[in-house]
Length: 121
Length: 121
DNA sequence: CTCAAAATCAACCGAATGGTTGAATAAGCG
DNA sequence: CGCTTATTCAACCATTCGGTTGATTTTGAG
Image (cartoon, each protein chain N blue to C red):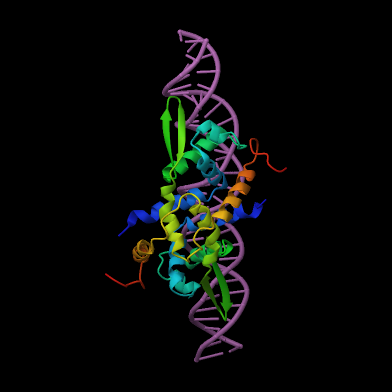
């Protein structure tokens, strides 16, 4: 009946299973970014980040728009909806503990390996 | 600060990225099941299902309790909470469209390959 | 036009996935 | 005890994954 839905969940969950990609999404929560800037805080090659970005794009979690010679990455949080709804069906997790999320976000930004993130500490 | 949380998300999202494993979780939503019964509707070996179950167990999404010679699998939906909260932080997906979920569940049960489910073609 | 920057491509690598089969272990049954 | 059922283990296989490096393409800037 919904043959497409299952594979959509496949790609979204798979995309979210990698910490680098989750970090990228977290960064994009603050603002749209160019590929080079996305890559900057990580200790891996630009090509590696480029691959992560295409995975996120294929999952629909970000969109990439080329303006001039730089490609801008923009969060597309709606792509998480199906997956989120699916999970919610397994138990009514209390209506979104935003506090906990904020705290987690902070800690995750701290986890981004090197430079540029220097808020607190 | 939360060094463990990130890898917890890794394993939970990775576990959810496979359609067979999501089907298993959906089945366990109805009732606890023995390994052999979990395996029955799928067109793959028991050993393969056994592996899927250990992955789900490591992710904390199910618990396996051996009573006699059969091992019972029980859903542990709380393991989804962290992941669910994480995703919710990216947008307030409307407060759980339970209807949509029910419909999707039905279609996903139809997707379980072989026997036992035979509604519509 | 020339050069440097932004990003991807292509080939390669080691490790992890998802599956198989056949043997091994464990426990209830007659 | 001896058989059968339930489940896992072990070895193997093909494919995918996450990363690397070096070359290539595209485009803005001087």
